[in-house]
Length: 223
Length: 233
Image (cartoon, rainbow over all chains, first blue to last red; front, side):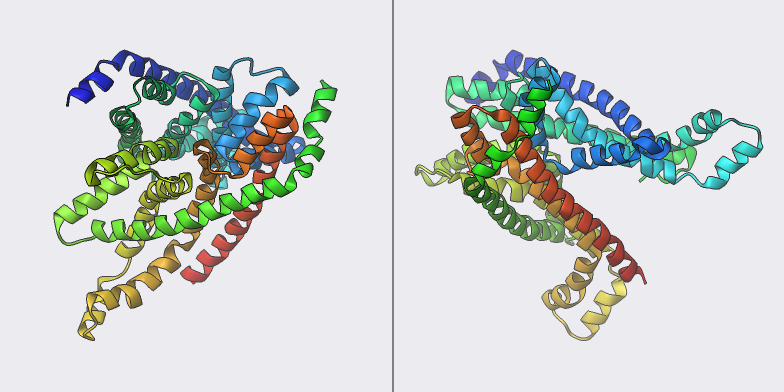
C-alpha cells in the first residue's frame, strides 16, 4: 500500500490538475459540438443550397478516426486556416468536430421523428414556421435526444485521452509525466484508468437516470 | 493562404511513399482482424456469464462489461502495454514484455468485448424460452442448445450492430501507432519526420481513412436496412 500512497495519493495535486484540464476540454468540446451539430443538422434539413456541404462535412467528421482528425486539426489547420493557435484549442476543436457530426445525425433523426401532422396542425392553428419549430419541434426533439446527447459526452471524454499526444496537460498526460519521473507505472496507470472508468461510468449512469426521469414524466420513449 | 492550401492538397508526396503507407494500412487490417476475434470470443464469454444462473457469475460478467465499456481505449492500450506485463512478471517471477502488436490486439479486443457482450446478451435474452425447452425435451445438451438453437438466432439478430462495432474498431486501430505498431499513422509520422511536410501527409492520411471508412459504413448501412427487413419479414 506504501506505493499507492507515495505514487498516487501524494501526487493528487498533479493528477487533479490534469483532471481539471480534461473536464475543461471536454466541456468546451461538448458545448461546441452541440452548437456545431445543430448548425449542420439545420443546414442539411432546411437550407437546400448548403445541403450537400452539410452532408459532406457530417460524413467526413463521422468517418475519420478521432486520432487522425486530431493530428490533422493540430498540424494542418494552423497552416491553412491560421487557427487553432494552441494545442489546447486544437484538442477541443477536434473533439467537437467529430461529435458534431454524430450529433447532427442524432438531431436529424429526432426532427424527422416528429409526425408531420403536428406541423400541419400548428400551421392551421396560425403558428408561423419559426413558432412551430420552437414550440412544437424543439421540445420534443430535446426530450427524445437527451440520452443520446449525454452518451455523446462519454464518447468525448473517452477520446479526450488522445489530446495528451499533442501535449495538452490533461489527466492522461499528467499521469504519463509521473510515470516518466518515477518509472513505476503499475499504481499510477491503474489509478488513472480507474479515474477515467469511474468518470465515464458516472456520466452514463446520470444519462440513464435522466432518460428514466424523462420517460416517467413526459411518457416519451427515450431511446 | 492559397499557396498553403495548394501545398496541403498536393498529395504527390503521399503517393510517392505509397508502398510503405500501404504496408502500414495492412497492419491496421491485421490488428483489426486479430482484435475483432478476441473481442468476439471474450464478448460471447462475458455475455454467457451475464445470463448465468449463479449470481457470482452474473456479477463477474457485469463487472467485465461495465469496466471495458467505460474505459477509454487509449488508457487501456497504455495499461495493457506497460502495466499488464509487470503484473504477470510479478506473478511468475520472470521478466515479461509484450510485443506492441500483442498489446494492441489485447487492449482493443478487451475494450470492444464489453460492447460485443451487450450485443450478444440482448440477442440471447430475446430467444423465446419455448425454444430452449423444446431443445431440452429432445434431449439436447446445454452446449448443443447453445450452438444449434441460441447462437444461430443471436448472430442473425445482432449482425447489423456487430458490423457497426467492427467499423468503430477499425477506426480505433489508428491509435496503436502510439505504442509503435507500424500502422498507417505510424508510418505517416515517420515520413513526416524525414520530409518535414506534415500538411500533405496528414491530409492524405485523413482522406485515406475517410474513404475506406465511408465506403464500409455506407455498405453496412444499406446492408443493415435490408437485413433488418429480411429478419422482421
